[in-house]
Image (tube, rainbow, N blue to C red):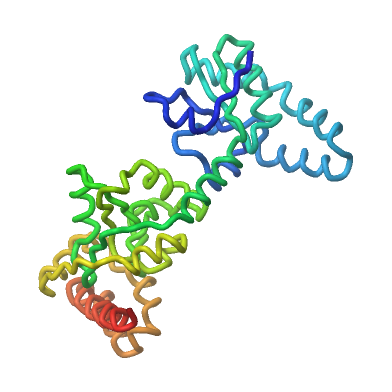
Amino acid sequence: MLKTITLSEWKNMPNPMPLLDARSEGEYEQGHIKGAISFPVLNNEERKLVGTCYKQKGSDQAVLLGYKLVGPKFEAYLKKAFKRFPKGAIAVHCWRGGLRSRIMGNLLDSAGYEVYQIKGGYKTYRELVLQYLERDFEFKVFTGYTGSGKTVLLEKMQAEGFQVLNLEGLANHRGSAFGNLGLPEQPTQEQFENSLYEVLWRFDFKKPIYTEDESRKIGRVVLPLKIYEAVRNAPLTFLDYAFENRLNHILETYGGFEPKELIQPTEKLKKRMGDKENRAALVSLEAGDIAAWAAMVLKHYDKQYTYSMTLK
């Protein structure tokens, strides 16, 4: 028999049972609960068909169409479940704890699993995320010129047990025009917010939380306002490294890329660098002189940092 469980109850289990996300693969990619496994009842196209049917013919006809599309796939669903999950407790959710998770839950229940349906589904989770990100935060923030190794320091601190909010790590972006080189694709805005929440809710706010100085926008994702304000208003620790040390760090990060991979991001800096400096940097790349290119780009970012600090 299908049982219900709250999201909080599932999250606070010492070893949470597997969580199946019965929404379409497109919904999952847009945003999902950390640890949830995509297990769609209806794929993207089928969901669209059911939605159109609901608008044009009403709820009953949409439900009938849903079962017509899903029924022939019951055997495939069970084979997939048997292959991935041992018999035992398993949780399932859809958008709001409705028909899709009930269908999947009842099917797995009939096959011998102990199934729990997440009350409220992903909709409740997103409400929780957005509400949580509206609270007031306090951070201790590292700042410094480009190449100071702020993210490297945070990663070391995290490994040593400090409470660290690694914004660039969660965003899959280093925060510059070259920030996505060699990194996985950035998350959607929705999933970025989910990831911020998943890190923050586990922290003890009586202890320091460390992060780095960031712009509101990191690549294509945007910091929630309350987090951005907390970063802007936090006490700063300046990492003071000589230009040569920072240049070496930049070369370690980007020196392994082919010059052609660096041309397009460099061209994006033309407006701020100015035609002459930007062209000189591009000429260095075309000549394969990565060190000269890095020095010019680093000087540009130093000027940008100095200017930004005058605005605080």
